[in-house]
Amino acid sequence: MGELPSPDEDFHRLVDSIYESALDVTMLPEALDRFSQYTCTDHPRYVVWDKLVRVTRLGMTPHGSFSPGGNELPGALSEGEIAPAGGPGLREHADLAAGVRLYDSDEVCVLMSGARSGRQDLDEQHRHRRLTQVLPHWARAARLQQRNVELSGMAALGLASLDTLDFGVMVLQGDMRVRYCNSWAEALVRADANLALVDGKLRARADALQSVLRQLLDGAVQGRDGGASAGSWMHVTSGGQPVPLIMMPLISRQTVESAWQLPVAMLLMGNSESRSVLDTSVLSSLFGLSRKESIVAIRLAAGETLQEIAEREFLSPHTVRVHIRDILRKTGTHRQAELVRLLHLLPGVALERGGAPGLPAPRGRRGATT
Picture (cartoon, rainbow, N blue to C red):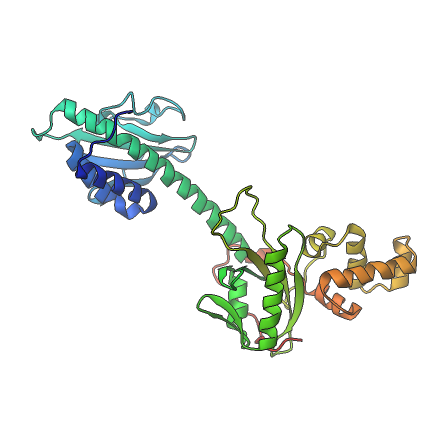
């Protein structure tokens, strides 16, 4: 395991092919073919065995994929011999005929098996040395492959959940390039005569709206203090439907960010056909409102007067006015009517659309801004 790798070109080509196959499963047959030639191994097989459901997730040979019948496992390694994570591994199984565990966790076991070739140009000692050099690379590649599978699965679930939301979610880089766009945001932009995606960037045909988007984005990516929204803007479609645009800073939870990563922000695009249930935590998250300010805003949206809010919350009318003034400032609105309109159009969630294959296009077309 600790020997320096062979300097021959075949070894390095094989190692390169192994790690390429960890990123692209279609490269596995080529990697197995190179492995077969280099180690004099006939019929090498690479299997990802799912311990939870006891089926093969992936089975590959130099000739392509295969699916063992029933609960069949490769080589001489039976299901009962699969030890928990941390059990015997490469050191105890130098012979592929016994089956080698490249990766073993509570959920999956990655196995390799094969038979000693009848070729006479490589003696057993030399073959064992080559296996000792190559198998650790297979083990590392298997760990990388499974980690990529886990991350891809988590990302897919996260993106699928965003598609169930009844409002648009768009992640923008500091240069206006769209890094992500959920289904509803795509439909909104597609139906809008005044917004478009040009070379992967969000663009407004009207200079006034483009300037607003630029200012909102700059405020989000430059502020990056983990606070609430950098601002909002009420966009009115050509059909007369108001669509609030709310720009939110996105802050990585990782302690160290990549130096090359551009700042990003999230643009929420409300749906005028959806009514959401207002919640103090939502308002606090979106606009940085205090709990009392959120309660005042919710009561305003419910149609209560300033005097009614003061009586219900045991506040003086002057204190309510101060709260309303601060709410207007934090939400980027200028009048109570504009604030109420914004609150009524805040993003909502359509649970019945979860998992639905299609997405209805929003009615009307979005046009000029107000």
